[in-house]
Image 1: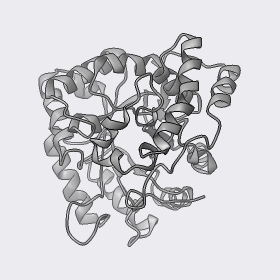
Image 2: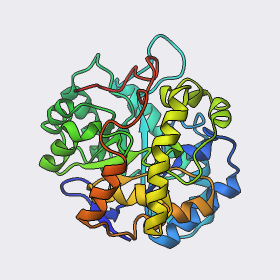
Image 3: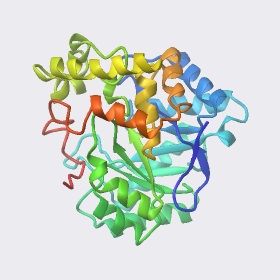
Image 4: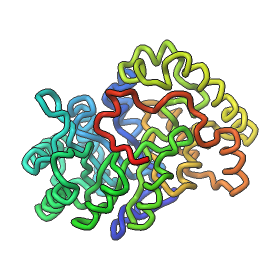
Length: 328
């Protein structure tokens, strides 16, 4: 398993992680047994990074991971555990980075996970009522209290990262990054490289579009997030399937699953992809991506069939864009 350093002075971790949102039934129900089988397979493959959040299933994802740690001796010591907070449920504020709120939510996560400390605690969404320096100061105090070993942000701008980093080392920034979402290349990739911050890439297979079995239009419409997501609405959906058919054909020509090729591309670009799945067969395809060493010629072929800007429709609709920082 390829490895990377988590943050400028952090530990070496696998350059592939499991995104645990799927455990909470976001794209269909996942049983505890299915989720635990995925975690078992990740551990066996040396994929040690687990990435979850307190809002995934209102804590269900964390509870499933905590139950797995409880029944799997030695697993907690081997795995690199990350969770997030900052998105509220109900009330007037959608996002809250108040120091007391973050610590309270982290305490809840620690209880559900059955641990005294996580390895990485992210701000899930930056709350602009605070400065980046103020939020980073709050995160630094959580490190000092021994509740997390390192801290990060999700969906922020490079300028926010630099300001926060000046107050406290930021180990990771989580951003959507894949062959279908290349915006991080316009500043975030560069800022992370400059600071030694790890770029954690969520949705690295484009919410199934970059796999051999993309969601059907009907299945997409059955999930609340995808039903109103521009890339999964007509006529964009049909156009995106036609565009990614070229990628699937290239993957077949190269003798690899499309999902594996998408993961390999993310790793070649220096990011740590965290795909989500509840299916061990699909996980095997994803893990294969961590074994592929793409040549410059391979990358050029991939980017020729899926050039920058190929996708039809924005990655988020207007409501989904509330919270993430746009920077270009």
